[in-house]
Image 1: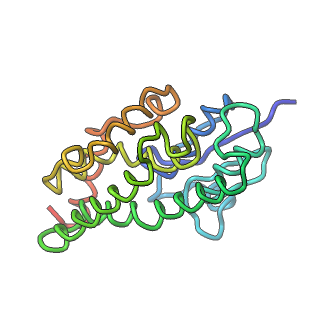
Image 2: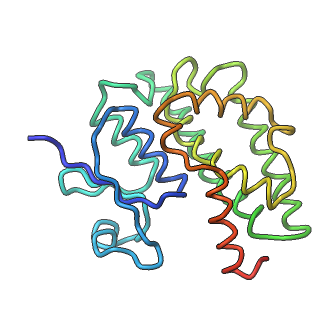
Length: 219
């Protein structure tokens, strides 16, 4: 009997993109369900009653919540194809460290770029570039964060690239001019079908952000 795999998600979510990329890398067939976060489905509320957030991976009726936890689960349940984490304990620990850094730094700072104005926005832009430079330094001359193979940290980070157009448009700056090595890495990731088919077009994300800015009275 085949596994039943359902992903509760929201199309512009960089956290949901992680699960979509990982499942595609592993060749796992799944049912995608896009959630309306203003009117969450009974299934989402049932499967993630604590946080009531996407993404939620439902595997044979059992929910797995939180995107990094989902990535580790996918890697353990379907280990054969495209391993995301190294077999070396130290390398796995390093990958988890950087994924945690991404979650604690990249999302909140990026959100401030499109959701603020003036001095607060300028400070957010400066901090964001500093964060990306830290990540560039960790990447070094490697093709991917884990080395030669596309892995855990790459999957955790690449979804943010689809938001860069919005950050640059509303923040009035160029990420490529500041962090060219980071953009080279992102374009390398986009050569993978799992990434190119998952990441939404930047213009579509910009339109989505415009709606949010109007909603929050930022425009």
